[in-house]
Image (cartoon, rainbow over all chains, first blue to last red):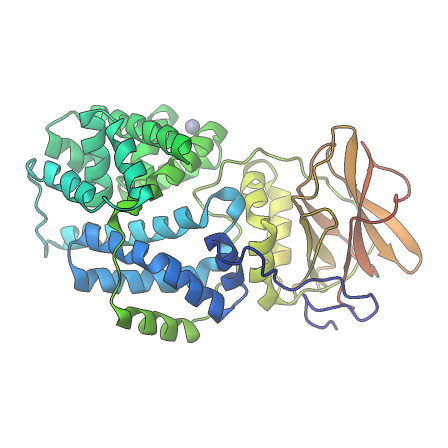
Length: 204
Length: 246
Ligand SMILES: [Zn+2]
């Protein structure tokens, strides 16, 4: 039988290396170490990403208590499934944030389906959505980048993207909110995101 | 219908699709490279929208999460994730090898997979190389699977996941030092009697995933840099020589 997999082999000089510490502060490195079961790495990852996870949940759910609940689920899921993260396929930030957004949105949708929650779906909320987001974004550089990049979108693109992302609405719901045709909204979202992508890349 | 699916990529990236559409899109991403590319890029843009919603969570959340984590078991890596990443497909050297034998502990699988980028390669493999991918899955999921890995000279990593009971292994070569198109990395199975080629990577490639059938008495798995197409005998020194648990 064999010993531990990652340990030094009995015959060879062990050239197997431990987890490198260099660059340990990046989310990717922390996530890798989390995948190895390192509690300390996960705690550091928590400190780095929890404000993002929690903040996004608050934004989408508009309910701090629920947001806290969902954020906890998300962060534990990050721990549980860190083993599946692969940085060749995308950044740790995208990976974690995607989990958070999906969870928050799923929560909104199931609440909607259960009919125990009335989400405001008035076209007048469109501006509020965007403005409050922008207002929150005054100090940090990244904030300015995102805000600036959102401004490169057309009005309809921007509204569609922000309603979907921050509001947790489906593109069909967005179409209703904006009183626009569904195929139009689909297209605007896609074009808007492409612009956002191009802009953020430049800004990076 | 696929035309229809293409147009949903943006909405999908925002989680603005229903469950049915999500499934359709993610299925499509496993078979459409251009959509997979676009999806990956849009995802990288979309998450930045959360730059403007950062908020300090209640302090108690940290304690609760860390406490729950302490009693939560981590998952073994899955073989496929629906939102397949944009990644150029790599040919997988098919190996027909003599007996090799090793084993890898199941608990370590998670670590390896995350480290080695196993799944990136797999996600790409799945559509066209499914028999091999299935075998790889079997190795990774084998109860006696064990893992060994090594940082390669010049950068990158070589990871071996092997199952003694199956007599099979998966070798993941990731991000070795770049080589020109007239050079190939070659993988060797080494035992007391000498070495044997396990496969030659495509010229110029620095990453690949291999399935090895028949590990026999292999002591270590080595990687060398050779002229394109490989050599009959390894050019030393080895870039990596991963000792198998024995
Ligand atoms: Zn497509």
